[in-house]
Image (cartoon, rainbow, N blue to C red; front, side, top):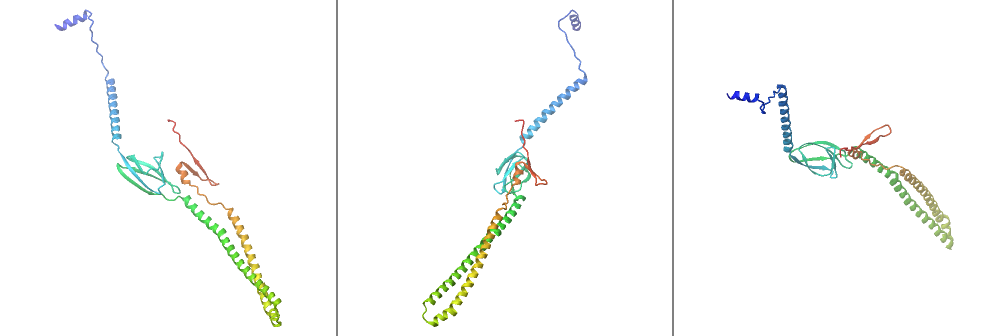
Length: 271
């Protein structure tokens, strides 16, 4: 009865109507798939955020010899601090100090406190520089100090021979004065035949030795002056810290004429 009334109401043009839409099963399946994908993404983001929030940091103490070391952290930050607080996980370090070799290493930072000890070795360039510098100093001693010492000894010897010659000359002058003042024929004869000839021979020998000593001294002085001039033409070895240039970002490119330094820089265009 009620059903018939409703049917008659619709036939009379009632303003109330019902619309039924039939959804295709394929479209319904696509909607479910998109919804499940969106839920999965939400869960993945939440899980990743939870992982990041759960990641803790650790404190690292650096004990590096020498004390004036520097290091580059993760190829980006140049620091000198001995205490660092870093996130857990691997971090790259490049350690360097003047005259030392660059040491690259990766340290895995655990949670809590940890320490790292390192003694930086001397660079090859510094060892070669020390060898060349020692050789240079040795050559300077041979070419300067030794000739100066020999020339100084020759000067002392020449001065001694001069004093001996002067003493013999003064003795001759005394003999001549005694000969002029002598009144005894015997004394005059002894002075003339024995004393004065003997003293004159001593003076001649002393004068010859002084002349030889003076000539040797002059030769040594000339040689010393030449060696000083020659040694002054030699360049003192210079130390070029290639490891520092490498630490700063340059690279050495060897070539047939010695090689060249090359370098580059990085500019972050997003800033």
